[in-house]
Image (tube, rainbow, N blue to C red):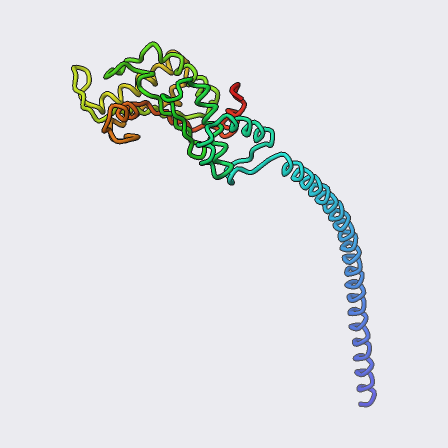
Length: 275
């Protein structure tokens, strides 16, 4: 009996020894794998740190360039009421133009944008016609509105364009053709006197026919792209002043040209020969 117990005890010790050795070997393998992974991770970490250092250096270099360009930009350009940027060279030309503008109108300019619009209006008006009282140019942001008295374009009560209109329409076409992205709306306006003839039913009819006559002339004689043109008639319902005198009615008989130009070309108008 004692002999049997002893044999059993020895067997248990032997088995325990075998299990512990297997665990030891497994742990050693795990340790070896962990060290290998750690070494690999360390190499990858060093590689990433090297790449990061290079990236940081490039970012610093770019930031320095950007700051350098910003300093140049700040010294050479001026913001125009958050809608555009004007070079200081253009600004000097604008000042030279404003020196020729009526002081009364100049006094009404409260902002840089107002001054810019006034200078461009002056140059544009001069480039289109020498008839100071019969052409009016106004600007709302970058939308140019040109009012041309009908006596420069049409005979009284007619939608046929007069011969003396060629000069002003030719110059207007040059402005329109200077910028491919420019869109132009031609509006006919009349005074309040009614009209009814064999070919004209009323003022609506007259205002529309005058607008389409101008559009056709620009397209056929001055090669203006017809896709840029819009013809509209407003009859007598948008007068500039009350139709209570011959002078006021003459002001209301007009053709209005509404131009939406590219902003760069808008500034380029400051380079006109009138400077």
